[in-house]
Image 1: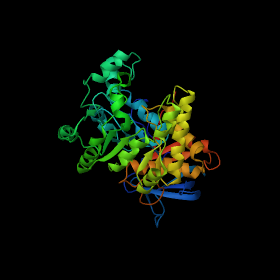
Image 2: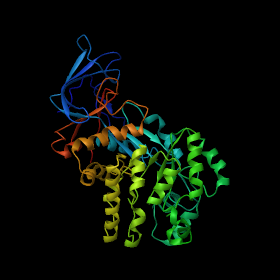
Image 3: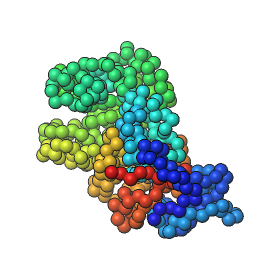
Image 4: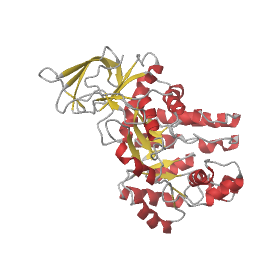
Length: 437
């Protein structure tokens, strides 16, 4: 059953902000009584007390009001550490509600338009919306990824046009440079790129590394336009520049060589595990996607967050035999990183695709094994804290933000219960989200 509302307001149209069903007055103490609260390993029966949007210690006097929880199972809200939406006002309400319905309160957008972010600033990071951090323009090479993708969307309304001539035209177009990507081809260009990056106050820079070891060969093959990224010699200076601006640098990587290069450059996060999205690779090339044990050990020891994007990898449109072989290498990389204690986090790498978000939440158990508690910690603790490292979120204890989900059944018994979300409370406010179609 839904939580008992303390203060009710009329339900509004789906396109408006989600309404507050619980809106505690400033300074008032609310007791959420008789629930099963996740403590990191198990569920513990009891109450939690909330004042001004945060959990507080039990008061010495009676609380101002009580919300009966009827033994419901409670977990912290989830995070998605690699998305590309919301990105602009178009369809924002639907995207926001999609995340909230999925229990995702915390979103990291690793690549978006500067103008789209500006359109949304007043509608994000409030008690009734999702909390979002942006990277804005990723830095790539001229003609690389995601330049082709964004230019093709503008020219042909499709990300990867099948016509080779259209692909080449998109890769040579620079109409959207400065808004959705920046290009860097040599070190003399770095000061100008840094100058343009300084226009924005965002906490992240995304650098694009795509099979850097074989970049020269890719550059001479017009059929692979849009399939490369930065050259190796600009990566470390670019990452150093990001750090000088106070930004953390996240790397898109596709091969083990890319991952090694990123580590040597002082990267702060990995947007992918090598091998996540490679299609139709020959058996003779698979080793370049396979992480060597010393590198996996180094990544694990560093504490750098690594987004698995397993939901995207499991949902590839083309399910060829060669792609399945590459996927086997990709999943072996995840298990190797797990063995060495890497800080694995979840991310869908989508434009708000519900199916991939759900698949990302469930497929990790198939690959990594372990119990449901470890999956809860990854989705609800490690991932949100990686997105917002300066905030007290992800734990259901005094001093932390009073944000949580109630579930319809025990996820330690049935993992699918993690998707059976009944109520969503953000900073002490119960959200009323329109049902999905």
